[in-house]
Image 1 (tube, rainbow, N blue to C red):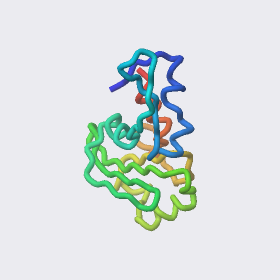
Image 2 (image 1 turned 120 degrees about the horizontal axis):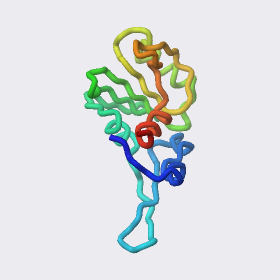
Image 3 (image 1 turned 60 degrees about the vertical axis):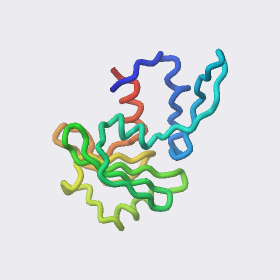
Length: 145
């Protein structure tokens, strides 16, 4: 599902910088009073699962990391890793190694990770990368027709 939102409001509506703190993302939402807004917490994890059509099979939390596994609409096995701003690339790499997640094998068809990272990456059969940034995929799914 794509959302048709005025081009001028895209950056203010979805602040990509705030994806560094994905577990505390807030939006100003219109109230019943014209012109009034109130700040509400938005569940980015659940919203992203919905946008990629993920049927979640497992969910785990590991010290600043939320890890979700599931199958998408195309029957691809997906791994999604959300991390808070305090989790460095080195900590992410250690976690992936500790959990024995192998990028090159076929355990997962696609892996999504928020924020820039240095995980090993390979091209898939559709000539796209196997490890993808949640931030850019989220934006693409929300705003590109």
